[in-house]
Image (cartoon, rainbow, N blue to C red; front, side):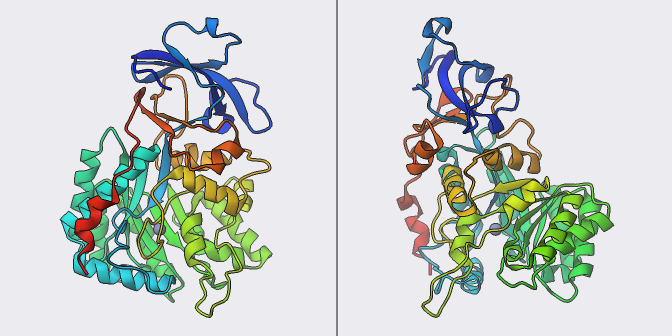
Length: 436
Ligand SMILES: [Zn+2]
């Protein structure tokens, strides 16, 4: 479907307005318009309205017949370091605490540099094959894991340069910030790696003081912030609001991303809207992790059925101008037993869970330009003349065709050329599974 020549044209590609900011066309009710994509030397030379006749398109080319073309994905919240430990450490009951304890035990027993590297590289291979170009991963950074995982991250970031842009945020519980010396050293380590300062926030009594320390460290080192906030159904969990308040108080000028924010969906409307107004004012972006939320939230141990979706209020957020994204989160570990870092799957599940449809509007931006902005990657997650020819050609020609099948036969193009899209074989991980 994609010629191997250095210069070619893909005619009748179906492009979405939210992913093609410079494309001047008349878009249909689904947000699509047909285009001719001219590629030269690994870059997009031009995006023009589809020519009426093939004669207008000169040189090498292929007619896509209206297939959807999307820019390579940006996945702004993952846990590559936890990925694929399921075969040796499962979640005993599917609960959040079950996940936390199982991961802690596995980390202590098994997370050597070799083990972390092998699983992270496997995850990167899956993401690349599915069409992802940039990933932010959290790295469990509770001592002594930070001394193991951060060097592995730096190594992999260099190895994968040109294939996947890799970012990392440290992950510790907010109570770890009480250890002033450890947290100061961690912030320094993160800064040295060009990383992002992160932690998990919940309602500890000294939350405000600890957040002050987090914000001060970020300001001192010029770091962006990334929180796991309120991943719970507890209506009392309001750490997102505290984060927004602290951002305003400190006049924080870096970027802040908050993940999960599940408890918002359980709180009274007036309280929720007040929180979101503050989040909007503070410029905090939010990423929802629909697959992991469906798995962990409202998990019941009494044989009854879950009654809510677990996801946060992206519609209300977007209406207030808050930047919103969706992302993969965990893959085959005790926090989520499934997943393969396929952002099309994430988008499909988000469509079903959060209603990214009727109308689709600009929701596709949640897997492209918006996470790219959050990760400070200008030009990523979009198709534009002059930009890199990094895109995915799907079989589907409409949203219902695209989202009804796994699209395992998609074509991923990087620097203008189709790449291998076979995902890594699970058997490669068998050697790691034997460890108890
Ligand atoms: Zn997470």
